[in-house]
Length: 113
Image 1 (cartoon, rainbow, N blue to C red):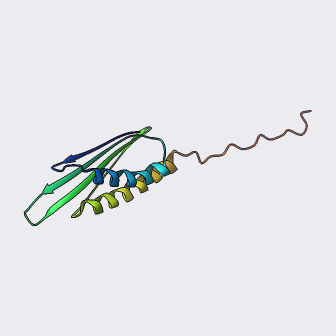
Image 2 (cartoon, rainbow, N blue to C red):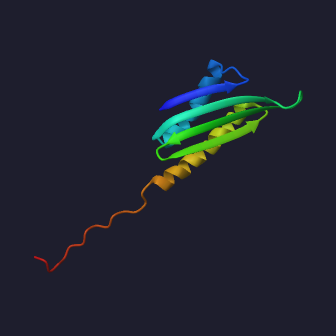
């Protein structure tokens, strides 16, 4: 799994990187066929009083890209909410991919002997 964590108008500290990794473990525990993960952490300065923290994840799994974004005043809260959304989408994708059709047992033909 390739992992890229980058910041926009923000320096990604080791503590922030570790926090993202621990939250991402939950997603990879539920679905292990993740090919590539891109995390973008952004600080948007809309006004002096209102600073928005935004987290985005693009998760590449076999056959599909899953994109999730979340904004909050606190970056850690944005990451928490983002990982909850991502976990729900990954579980939904996993349910779609799984084969729910079981092959029926071959019937024995009684008179064929």
